[in-house]
Amino acid sequence: MAKKKFVVGSFDNEDVLFPAVKKVRTAGYKIHDVYTPFPVHGLDHAIGIRETSLHTAGFIYGITGTATALGCMGWIFTTDWPVNIGGKPHFALPAFIPITFELTVLFSAVGMVITFCYLCQMMPFVKKHHFSLRATDDLFVMVIECTAKTNVDDLKAFLTNNGAIDVNVQEAEPGWWFGRYDKDQQLIRDTYVQPV
Image (cartoon, rainbow, N blue to C red):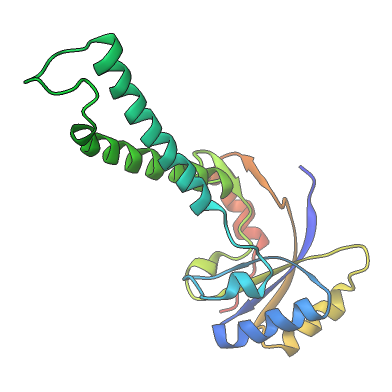
């Protein structure tokens, strides 16, 4: 695994985090990600993440469900097994609406969940590096990727001056890998020094 160096700044308040994110981006540093204990409105725009295309994928999955339902019922009732039920036409569209609606919702919901899990790398045995164990508890954690031009000491001082209560440097795998947390947990505990 190719490891990269990151400067990790922890903030205790979102009102301090937002101006710090803007100043870090203005200074030209590359923000890897910002981890928060709860969703923060507008943070994705502040760190420069584009809007997700998940709603477009959901529409495509829904149209696929609609086409599948109408296609299957149309083929079954007109070609494969045409049955005269009370003199109704073989392709009785009003009778197909409930099943078409349900299959549209099913395809859309299941497809979006699978797409979301794939894009966020949330699968069994897929692990990502935790930059701070308190990011899901009470801290807002900004992770900045170091490049060849990055002066780590200046960046640490910059984050501290902009409200970070804890700043440390970590080397980590930026992507995901297959593994188990019980084997990596001791490494995680040894890597992080959390403020008391």
